[in-house]
Image (tube, protein in one colour):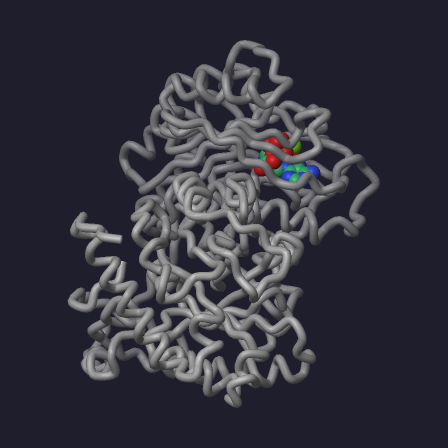
Length: 555
Ligand SMILES: Nc1ncnc2c1ncn2[C@@H]1O[C@H](COP(=O)(O)OP(=O)(O)OP(=O)(O)O)[C@@H](O)[C@H]1O
Ligand SMILES: Cc1ncc(CO)c(N)n1
Ligand SMILES: [Mg+2]
């Protein structure tokens, strides 16, 4: 939470095109403090930096798929798409296409060992991901290599049978997986058939069977288990079950209607490995991987390759879409939600001020994030206004979000988008904006908050807390509803709806987990002095915050 005295020293990461000079700067939390403090914060010290960039690195130990949709080929493309370097140790060469597997040619174990030695001894691997390990001997070689060259994480996809029904690893590998490799794994990712085989043929037909299976497989020693439900018959969504040893999570995604699902499992495990190599926590890595697979399937629905029943999909779909080339904006920090200003041009014209003047004033007053919410403005005017506001926000290092209009956000390279329940789904917004942008979702219920998290949003807006004139027909849920959703939410929350100087303390005073701030429209913009009102609200919030943190809340 913001505090006027907290100072941190933070390295400034420069884009790769910038001359190789590193700066360090003093950064105060939150981003908008007084101009005096900001001036101090920007004093930079130039110093020489060695010429070295460490790329996150995944090593895949898997089989080649001549059709290019699964195996090593999927792994390399998936890691590339996630921005991670991928080396490969090939365990077998398969002759494979959309019809099935026509042949398997295992690589001799001694030569697999040689490949492992070459890469692990030299190339600073962060994460190892395994796919097709055709024999128990290969598993043994791999375990020995990992003991000699430990890595940060091990992702085991226990590939046994292809979807076409062809055997990719001997049944005798089962005990190698269970007794040797699983105990070293950070996560194992069996599909339904593999989970069943690992558990001696246990029937898996429902999501609760999947949970039981995840818990049983966990007993073999991996830190986490993900039982994948791509092949769960009769399921209208794509549900996977994640178990971390304590909690079982059902991860629900939309089921894409397509024949092009060959290689989803390899891709999912590689994306998890890629996210782990970048430093993501496990559950976040799994979520990001699942969202990637779903998006890739969605964007590849129309691909026609081969005459068989299961086609490949396009891992590099993002390259085709120019929006993905937009520069990342300010990285999301939950504390930015502290004083969240939402614009309204009707109020600005009432008080005779321009949008840019209003945005500048609200930032000077102490707003920590700005959202342009313009329901009536023509597209061209909206883009011009948003571009001008972006300049002001960039200058002050305050994130600018656009309500609903992903197109406007892309054109003006805003820091993100805020969507409501009837706007574009957050996962689609994420697919369009890419991973570096901020996405917020308005939610009224716990299940909407859960869905926002699943969709890859960064925060939720919860409201209306109090009655408001800004939104007609908006149900008021009150402070009790706010507390309930905050406690259940996995994302930071900003409260909205009828909040102003007179009642903001009631909101922050709840002191409830995940509540990071208040979003305000009329109380800032339907006033004569935007800057003055914002300053006053900011000081009310800061006073409330310090009494909450000292445990001396007086309402
Ligand atoms: N049609 C689909 N729509 C959305 N997600 C899907 C679909 N099919 C599979 N998935 C997702 O893809 C991931 C891989 O699951 P799946 O059960 O297909 O693995 P697999 O059988 O090991 O894959 P492979 O085809 O590589 O053998 C899971 O997250 C699953 O939910
Ligand atoms: C080489 C290889 N690895 C894994 C799979 C599972 O999809 C496959 N079909 N082929
Ligand atoms: Mg499958």
